[in-house]
Amino acid sequence: MYYESILLAAGQGRRMGASRNKILLHLLGKPVIVYSLEVFLADPACHHIVLVVQEDEKELMSQIIKRYFFPSSKKKISIVVGGVERQESVYCGLLAVKRLNELVMVHDGARPFVTLAQLKSIYKKASENKAAILGVPVKDTIKKVIAGKVSQTISREELWQIQTPQAFLGKELFEAQQLAKEDDFLGTDDASLMEKYGSREIDLVLGSYDNIKLTTPDDMMMGESILRRRIKQA
Image 1 (cartoon, one colour):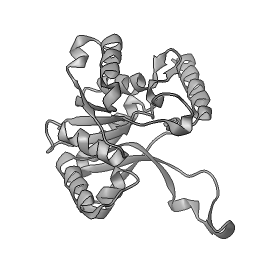
Image 2: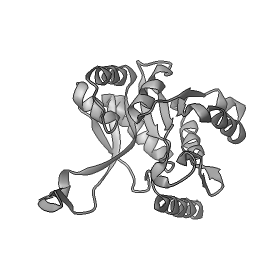
Image 3: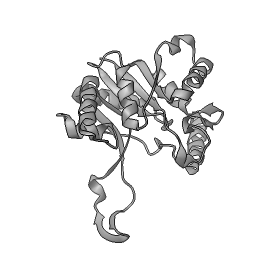
Image 4: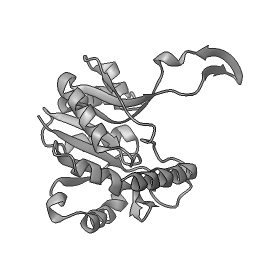
């Protein structure tokens, strides 16, 4: 078994305060999206990448791929246009997947710090159960707040921060997407659709606190710090 990946790069980056898509911003000289592409291309189990982009950035993404990757790598990458919501973009990506009866990993392009070791871990687990996601235990104290008043302190033992990639059998994720469209249900991630419409238990694989999603300018500064540390450790 191998897998195909859907790499989401059709976001807007409004909270980043940038004038363009945040995955096009540069971190230590390279566009954010390049880091994720490098990791997936380095995984022998990944046979195809569906890069989901905005309509007006399709040509620019093609140029980025041409600049940073060899021709042999480009053959593994398909570029498709996404939707308004993340869920719509995943659906557009699924339409471009070559074999839905194999595993599909969905990853946010704004998470450039995923590692090859994490891809291998989630692939191994998903190969067993056909449903696995990355996550890390919550560190902070979590409280339920209603109308500005603290209502309850929630135990952290069962709380995890969920990341991407998330891996599922392609046809099952596609079916869940179709049912969600019929019900007008908008999930917060792919796992939320599988929880509602799927029949499998979803395995949790330990991720990394480095696997952050770049959302605000502060995240970009943290991202540079992560990259510099990795370069120093290499």
